[in-house]
Image (cartoon, rainbow, N blue to C red; front, top):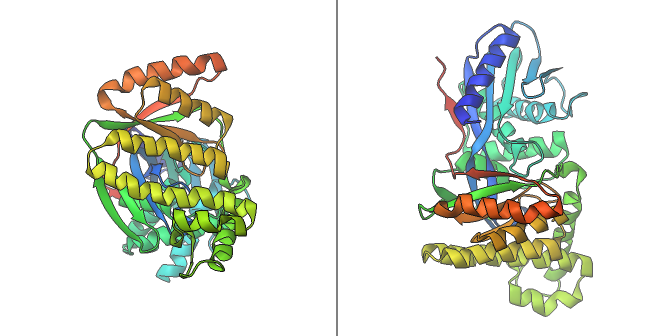
Length: 390
């Protein structure tokens, strides 16, 4: 379903349920994480892209107090108010919207009340394409437009991340929100999570990505995500005792320094750190390959990243491993899991002219294993925006 079809359905569904056309509409995209897995909260660097899938949020004022929130895809409505913080006593999807609204109310020092809100999206929940961040960012974009307020995009990303931490229970980094806010058409986004600088990285025009979803749903709040993050922090603290230069995060540890000191720290923490330190180095090398136009070398970085995810971070699954191996044999330039892992999707980088052939060969290789994944070609796209209202 195209973005315009999603927007049209959100508009129609809002009008039908609340008997009033929306006065504000906003769109925010999901993302693919291309390289830099679990590096964001370790103050590292990431290559990502906003995609042409996302969420539309439509809203209108209501004479009734509180917030009425409609999830159009499940045909359900949740009611809550913003007089107190904390999760909604009801469907989990409402927490992303409540969290954003509650924190915007505090930041803007303005009551947010008497609103009807509808959201609808094209990102499959649990696919690893960050439907949660797209919902958070589209909500923030719509509510700020309704308030006639502007905030620095960095602050919006941080508020959306807090909403996910405090209301949804997932201790995520800023990557998903950054991608949704700062995306640019036909570009990767290079995000530095120490300096918080973001820059576009233009791709060759014949490069596209396949999102391959073996339909193994995940929810980061229920996964070992938080434990992996704690291990990374543990590794940084322990390595700081053995290295001459200050270590604030794993970003400060080079592969050579880690190799020299690895045996001195907790083995489980070292295993997780090996992945993150290697990923930060892979992003640096990948930038060199992209600038040189060597997409084959860049693609190999993706394959290496997935191997490290499987072996060191253990956030892959047998289904994702099978997808990546099938993509390799089908002729993809590179492939890896995308996002937090523990389920979700893989991505494959391909030449546009060979996308159909790679897809066909990949599906044929997976069929004997009983896997029939959804395969979708996605285009790096622009970030969040307020939509015109007729």
